[in-house]
Length: 166
View 1 (cartoon, rainbow, N blue to C red):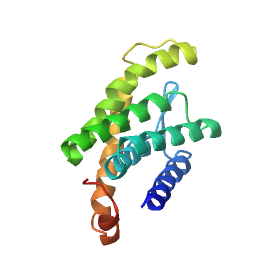
View 2: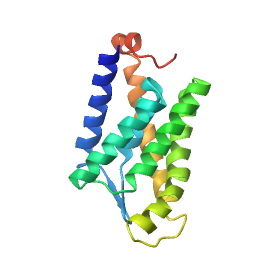
View 3: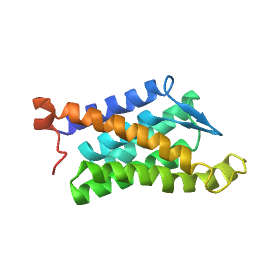
View 4: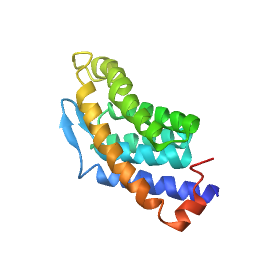
C-alpha cells in the first residue's frame, strides 16, 4: 500500500506543479492557484493531513523554484490542507474537509501571509489584504476537487485501494 500512496501523491504533486504554469490568478504579490486547493482536498481525504502537508509543501517549493509561485504559496496551501485533513479525520465527511480547506487557506493562510509578505518579501500590505482572494481561490479549487473526488469514487479500483474512510 505504501508504494501506491507514494505513487498517487507523486502524481498529485506533478499535476500541481505542471498545472501551475497554466492556471493561476495574479493577486498582488501572490499567484492564487485554485488547482492547489483541489489537490489539497483530495490528499486530505485520501491520505490524511501528513501526506497532504507534504504534497502542499512539495508543490509550493517546486513552484517557487520554477518561478511560478511566491513565498505566499507555503502558508496558504499547507495550513489549508492540514485543517482539511484534521477535520476530515474527525468528522469523516467531505464537507468538513472542504470547509477546512476554505477556512484554513482563506482565513488562516491569508493572515499568516501578512508577516511573510512584510518581513520575507519586503512588501507592506493590509492585514486582511489576501483574505478575499485566498477565499475565492480556495472555493474554486474545492469545488473542482469535490467534482473530481465524486468522479473518482465511481471507479472500483480507487474505492477499493484508497483508505479515505478509515
